[in-house]
Image 1 (cartoon, rainbow, N blue to C red):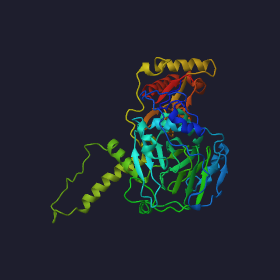
Image 2 (image 1 turned 45 degrees about the horizontal axis):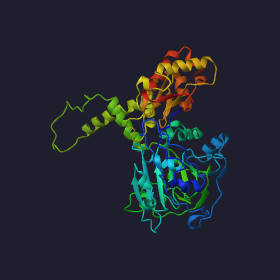
Image 3 (image 1 turned 60 degrees about the vertical axis):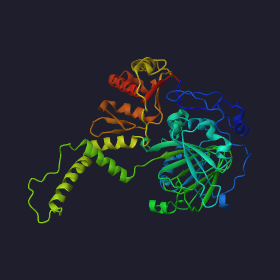
Length: 490
């Protein structure tokens, strides 16, 4: 079985969960917890009171405009999307994924927020004029957190980051966005909001697709992006633990239903408000490194990897100067030359820069201490007792030309990417900031591992028995032991 690292909520038969049953949401029939999370069930974790269906209307009387609206999001339109909208302007996509079913229920999301290694928060506010009632609480939470008397019946939102790391079905959603490079993916954040729930009008510094999972949410956006951080800061509500815009002028507004999706480029102010007690929104975020970070972390890498610890400023030709407090031009020139020579040499070394960049952009920006979990050989699978046994089973399956397993899955939440070096110099495979150098004949392995989340014996084909079968087997075993891959039969 493919593993599922999620703390799920309990059966729909629990009376306290009836509010969601009344709204037509199907809850899981049993708790299933695997992997690193503890065996915990969180009974009736969300107790929002059912209030019936809402008539969707735009906040503040803003007319709903249908400019820049697509119907559907077929792969044939991805190139058009990149050319016309990506990092340029918003796009609303009605039924981006037809008959879409959310891969996680509100109860499961709340259960996940109770886990120690899950980043979550609850935002309340938006009830009072002036945006003065916003408050943020950080997880992990417990069952009592979600009592109605604790949060109130409306105007609260639960947000859980990196759900794709814990729930394979959520991770699989990222395959629908494979027209954007792997290294640009940040995470999949999912929110549940009671009626009126919101995080306030705000700005994000990354590209984001806002996919409606269940219920309805009204989204409003401003006419133009906020160009500078200074402008954003000048508009924030003061003295609250949230970056909420004090003034927000909605230029366009839409109501999204399950399967609808809104794309927003970086720094485009937006405001979303739940219209019912069944609202979940799936936010697929794509990061881009800032120039400040590129410069900072690259020069750190140059200093730590290319400059000897014994390299020091030297002035053997020092002479007495009139004022000891003066920093003379010669000293400045020596220091500048030392910095310039090291940085320029590193920039001119294409292999070094590519390897640094690949490791940097695939490393999670969050603290993943202990993940992935390195495994002992007998922990690789419940079916196979060692990495070599997995590879041998794949080889036998490939030779039989069948469709069976075993299959190898990339550990969820890790970024896989690669750089192919020029001049028949092979490739470097990057996984969550770690580098694996592959020879010229092994470039195919990097391509296969980065193409999708699953590798089948058929995908590996003749490579398992070809000229580089030994190198491939060694790489796969290394990745299995490191926890970067795991084996499953389904």
